[in-house]
Image (cartoon, rainbow, N blue to C red; front, side, top):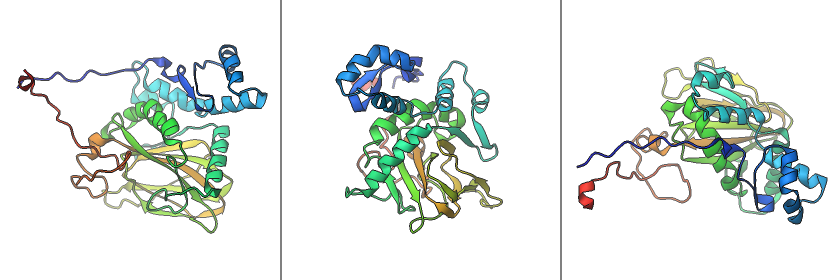
Length: 312
């Protein structure tokens, strides 16, 4: 059998973050460097498609500015030549070096507010809804809201993967190929807290969206496989727009809500190259069952080598 060369490392151009951005509301791909440039280059076509008032344009800018500048800078650094973990950690808040928990602003405040409004409209509608997960009773699956493909997939592919590749190379951070994204809601008369658990994911992003509330802090123990995993748990307060990054196997939960409502976006990030070998839930070789969509992120392995002699 002939030897097959190792795959090449592929890269992306820096324009990935500024060019060919798709504005779904107006069905238009744009290049964005600044508000002035956007108005100059796309003003006529935007007006012809219904973006006519100052309010329309400000809403467009708010949608384009969904990601916080700090997060964009972190992602851009992560794909720059010579990027390394030391340099990345200078651009993140290290919540716990021992537990490898980090925090960074992810979404702008206007985007969090706009997303909350959409979530509340969906919650009040009569459209069919599934539970976010087996632990939370209240919330929204992002694919039911139509935001999985236009929002969450680009977020994972363009921004989170290069960051996670530096932070968690041993957990499949550079091989993320699927996700499960959902919003959880905590409110009086509904879910108030969440017991200690670990996620069905290699890595997790948890972003606070709002609203006004007291209590509900996240707490973290050790890895679920470790002895005395809940000794002296670490508590982390929510900050609207900011995301907490951690390993899926890190034991964690939510303290009881005091007052108000708390909404959080949770993204379970999965790497089939890791979970295909060992299911993170049963800790056994996975017994695969076909399903739809991303399902639980497992894939049926393809052959890793090719017998070139058999092709001649």
